[in-house]
Amino acid sequence: MKENTALERAYLSLEGLSIGDAFGQGFFVAPEILESLIELRALPSEPWIFTDDTMMALSIFYILRKYGFIDQDKLAVNLAKHYDNTRGYGPAMHGLLHRIRMGESWQEAAPDLFAGQGSYGNGAAMRVAPLGAYFADDIKKVIQQAELSAVVTHSHPEAIAGAIATALAAAWAWQLANDKILLNRADFLDLILPSVPKSEVSRKIRKARDMDKTASVEFAVSVLGNGSLISAQDTVPFTLWCAGTHLNNYEEALWLTLSGQGDRDTTCAIVGGIVALYTGKEAIPNHWLNAREALPSWPFIETITLS
Image (cartoon, rainbow, N blue to C red; front, side, top):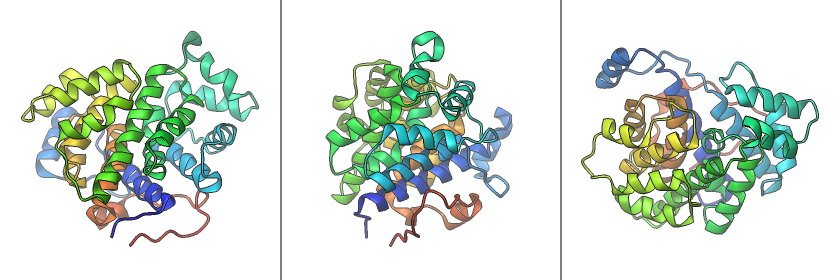
């Protein structure tokens, strides 16, 4: 049975995201070793430790659970409160979240990054799939709330476009599963593209849509990137290409994403948060779930049981 309540959907996406994050984090090894591990389908040693991707997604979940919408001031405070410098945050976020924790407003601090252009990093996209899940039955709200969630830390238009695209992918994944429809990659991306603001992100998603269905992951990376530049433009199009390729198979989607190398914890987090909404939790191997370190208790008001 598919999950129908907004919070259950968000929790399912959070599980898919956090497991993908921890899975990808376990594979930061030399390229030749990684290729061998992928060929053997050899899993990382346990426990699988999640990163800033999950930490920030937990804040999104908490705000939605408590308020039912993105309260930007509360989100900024929560992100800063739960900032953990051992979790692999990027240099800009280290500084920004410290400034917010010290009392500076996000409205001043976030646009001030990178000489006043704001950050176009992939951090707004990597945490947003649970939001897309939460508002999945209202695409207009997905777009509005994704933008609100992004600008708290990533005010550059490319980062906003990346967050919107990722949230839309999550929402459409749930809608398609609920309607028992499986689309090919091109048709899946065609659902997303009309609502993504004009940007480098949207241009490259269009390239992902138009790519031959037999294109290799190496070719996809050469055209779309793989997160190595830690930007929305370099991350989101590739992750949507991966999610659209294996929308109905959580494991295959993550192995494909991993084979692109690059920023593999973040790319796998994004793909995991999207694809889990189509497959359901039952498609996530139990040993993967058990391998990931336990999520902290603070975002949850009660235990959520998914059927």
